[in-house]
Image 1 (spheres, rainbow, N blue to C red):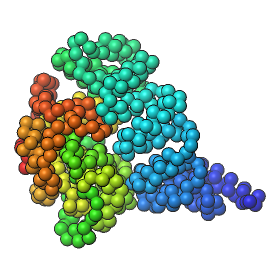
Image 2 (image 1 turned 120 degrees about the horizontal axis):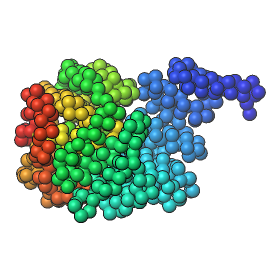
Image 3 (image 1 turned 90 degrees about the vertical axis):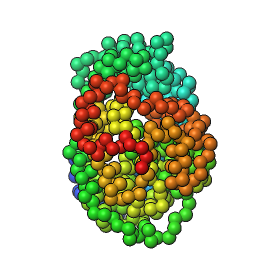
Image 4 (image 1 turned 135 degrees about the horizontal axis):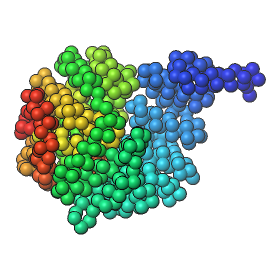
Length: 544
């Protein structure tokens, strides 16, 4: 039992630590928590708080070490274990986080809110089936909120149960008519037709939303319903009306999520000017790795990466890991730089010459190979990994990198009409979109020029027009033989966590080729802006 003096000191330190954290005095908070941890070394909550403060001070590795220490000696405190799991994911310790989740799964009668938290974290790890099971247990236990029902619908959608997803979303809108998340997903799940559409309901809801409300949350909801109206009118081929709705939606989203052109250009420039990582690396001289091989799919978002993923993962020796950010997390861990958008990326690039790339590759494999589920290969499909090509090639020289290439205007228009929510700010303004695309094209050209053979270009138009020939080339590049199932991705029953999950469960088609021409007049400023950069237009060419 602590002495009265020790208890007083402990209480004082806890109060002082809280004051420092509340006022964001991180250095003082760290010193105070370290003193408190010395006084109460068995208090896991103090160590978790210390890990969080250390992370905020830019010391990712130290934060991860503290969390791993706690994970090895977890108390019987479900909420604390959940917090540790969430933070372990943030610092790139996925295996330890899954260990925490496995421990929580043993709880005999967990409260519904704990089931919901586990479902969200499993979902963030790409574990769709476990997330769905956990959330359905929570719903059966009485959880009843629009957010959780929306997540349930998404999990049903990603699992291929479109009918049940629609039923859940329709119930959401019946009970919460202004729930924009549900309206937006629902119109995307089915093609709207003249005889079956939600246009009247969406327009009625828009009439009820205050037009001049400046609250960001209210503005976001209006954007969602404008998007839903666009999707319906686009399906009905009422293009001018549809464009007006999309323009209003994206104007709001651009206002809420301004694009950082200066930061994006700075990252591209830094990657291009980054000293060559060289061939004589620790990674290439290290012992051959064991276990499944990652296959990276990179490119612009909405360039056909999901279709290629579904075709490849229909192969008997290939699993899809989905859109995971594990390579970024491990790279940040190696550079000891917490993620911080452009600033964090620039700091990682500055430290690139000092990174142990053999260890980077080993860490990535250790944290991800479970995703192969017994198959020889697993797909890491993250378009943004186009920025990681040099790092991937250095750390994992054995891993194929497939670069999906699509017509620039088709790609950009597909982004412009995607409504990604409060992410991807480049996608809500035509000039921002052109700028972002030019950075992508410039970087892609640089990789080809300075790392020849580092990635294989795969043309979207060629893939959908001549899938057998194109996919055979892709599989040969990956060391695999073509299987007939790869040409029938609509039969692939595995979950797919992407907004286009309903579309990619269809058979291969060419409807996405030239889709932008329905809005050629409105997209003329985009076409001119992209044409300012000659390298940008090169990416509509066939596979290299």
